[in-house]
Length: 130
Image 1 (tube, rainbow, N blue to C red):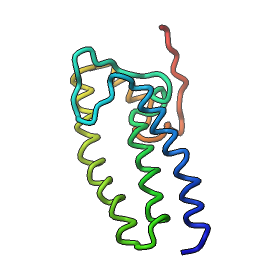
Image 2: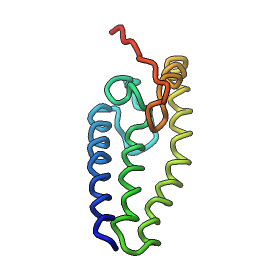
Image 3: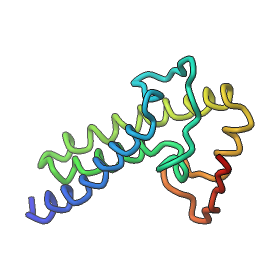
Image 4: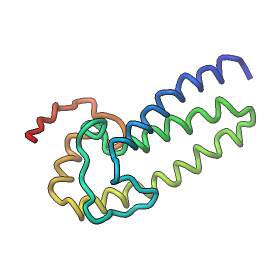
């Protein structure tokens, strides 16, 4: 494996870890390992969530995308990417449906101004009145 591959992986890994941390901190007590909404669950639309609905998933895509560059066995390197893709494509639509059911029009409006994984290319500045 050329030296530049693991070096590139570590360069990509750092922002992925930072984004994961920022996402986790921004969610606060709303964070959960399961797809559930708790009593008092709030719709977070500030911080990184002002631009992206699922930044924690974005960060995990960034992190898992580095594994093929770090592991010399290509099958083992891509296995986490494939596994994560399976989880992502099953879980995120369920989460978004659950959020729409709980938060209704507020979540639908939020979806119009944010990207699922990355900020929209034609992002309009959201004005907060609180």
